Amino acid sequence: METWNQFITYVGQNGDYIWFQFYRHFLMAAYGVLFAAVISIPLGILIARYGKLSSWVLAFGSIIQTIPALGALAVIMIAFGLGTNTVIITLMLYSILPITQNTYVGMKEVDKTVVEAGYASGMTRFQLLRMVELPLAISVIMAGLRTALVVGIGIAAVGAFVGAGG
Amino acid sequence: MLEFKNVTKVYDGGKTAVKKLNLKINKGEFVCFIGPSGCGKTTTMKMVNRLIDISDGTILVDGKDIKQQDPVQLRRSIGYVIQQIGLMPHMTIKENIVLVGTLLKWPEEKKNERAKELIKLVGLPTEYLDKYPHELSGGQQQRIGVLRALAVNPPLILMDEPFGALDPITRDALQDEFKKLQKELHKTIIFVTHDMDEALKLADRVVIMRDGEVVQADTPEEILRNPANEFVEEFLGKERLIQGRPDVTTVGQIMEGTPITVQENESLKNAISIMRDKHVDSLLVLDQQEKLVGFIDIEIINLNYKKATLVNEVMEKEFLYVEKDSLLRDTVHKILRRGVKYVPVVDEEKKLVGIVTRATLANLVYDTIWGDGFDVEEHVDLEIAK
Image 1 (cartoon, each protein chain N blue to C red):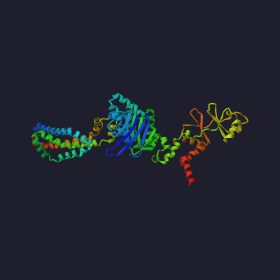
Image 2 (image 1 turned 45 degrees about the horizontal axis):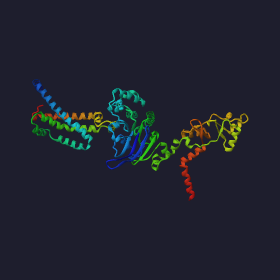
Image 3 (image 1 turned 120 degrees about the vertical axis):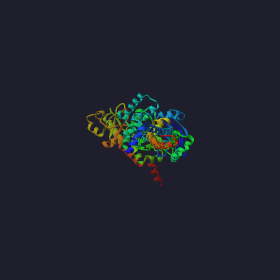
């Protein structure tokens, strides 16, 4: 019971601080995923369309994924110094694979006959993407973003070591 | 309307899919491309809306070279139906039908109106417009697929085995419906299929292809009657060739000319002497305009020669006759079922043009079973020569 009381006291005295750190932690993860999405979704669309690139890009993503987070942070810290930027860039690197891969799979899984029908109806490449492929791939792409966010929240905790807080 | 000039397609691997194809398709014509798989029929079709690029030669649509046109605009002006239907699963039926209209930036009202108008064509209720494709059966989905191709009223429609994936009963229904629709709308249609029955049923002209070349391009009747070579014969199948004759032959083609006749105002005495001269037991009776009005036979004369003197007083006015454009199949039925000895053949104005007797039918059956009469004679000659 004593621990419980102490916890309540602590939260009562440092509520603002905890909230601030919670917010900061979440924001770092979210920014990392957001920036990764800006790169990875177009990348996924690109490799889905030009199949030869896909194995290279996905292999590269997997390699990044295997680097231990702490090590990666240390190396990136050399370039970007202490603070949140380093963590966001690291998170971005880790998010690239799940988002790219899911975008790639999502695009590949769109029914080829639907794409052919759209194309033969006179859609431009961009219309095909906007009106057919993206709407049909969106659920798989969202699943990728979610995975990336889960990974990101975990890694952001390590960010405390490079003075990012959270 | 559509013209292929020396069209050749060589794929990247060096395989020639289509070799110097020349073909002219008229407006409103329903053309079926048919052949074994890999014969280039689908490639030929897909070159028309530039889904596949032409290696050499030109395709003209309405006199304009398709290579000079923007492929996107070209495709919007040509309807396209595929075997796998390919409706957009995330769009309602209405959105699917007017897809090309959306691409052409039609106002919403025009799209609604067009969708309602079209869905009535295939006999589906307008409530279906708000459903999604997965709620419809396969046959209904393909009806929508056809409507999508018709949405902006293109003069030319390409169809790639559109009914191939449907069950036989639905396929039959859709074929009938579509044939009817085409007659109303007068579209030019390129229809790729591997089903010979379908091609013979629907097409105005059947183009049989093999190894990227046209083997024969002709009307279904002509192909059945005169297959260009053994390949075509084999492709049609013996069974179809035998069935083919009575199916496609009209009475006019097999009837015998110059039946024995008598004028209606002739005397019975003259009638009987004509019968004796020509060795027949009945005569067809004509009026002054050469129109068929009845017949008279030896029994009628025998019963009435004391009471009457003129043919038209006693002739039988109730009789069976056929028009010369009617199909032989139906005529054969009539002759066999009613047990008559002959059927007079008339033209549209009921003028007598010929006669079909049981003997004529015997010749026909003989030809069907033993091949052309001419062939048989040749064989006989050979036998004698030996």
